[in-house]
Length: 237
Image 1 (spheres, helix red, strand yellow):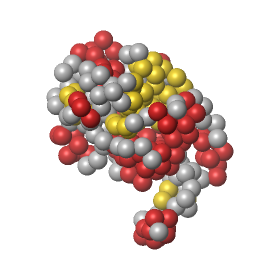
Image 2: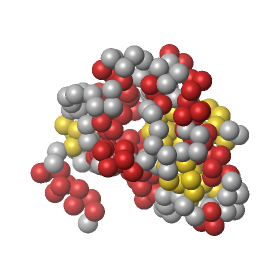
Image 3: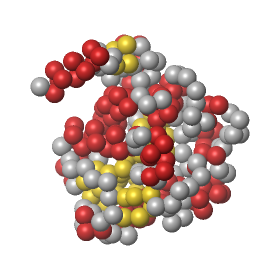
Image 4: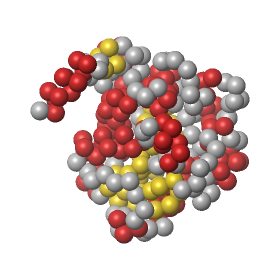
């Protein structure tokens, strides 16, 4: 029934390849070319996050970068499903999902959430929860409105997020293994603050997974005038 509903919905709201914007079938996660050139070439990138491990199927570049920008800033929320499918494969390769008790996500401040209308990391977490049959919950909240991380120098990113996150319910994660989801990992500051806050509730372990990991040159802040780094990049990429 759910598959049929998606096809009916696609009749009115066509689905597009997240990497190049070509029209695709509802069950596809990419067009033929991007499936071969992007999805099939995905590999596991591993990085450390405050004693935890973070994995990603992609580097934050090229068509992957384009996909994430469209997803976040152009309201292409339907990209959550195809992007989460690639992330799911990486999670299954890297972690024992039978040990994961809860999937959660990096929260947004209510002001930013109101402006964007959705949290892309939450959408990814929900998709993973459904496909992996693991409970999902928003256990973190962002209580301090902060400057955009990508606009800050590396030395300022940690300071910017100090005191920004809080736990909603410590008992909900105590003794459990948590999978924390975000869209992109750049310097690692955001994930580190979230992991630290989660560990304050004494979970068994915290794992992390993101769609893309930024290379060194991508982690350097760009000038505010650079349209590629704007939170409101005009037009559909």
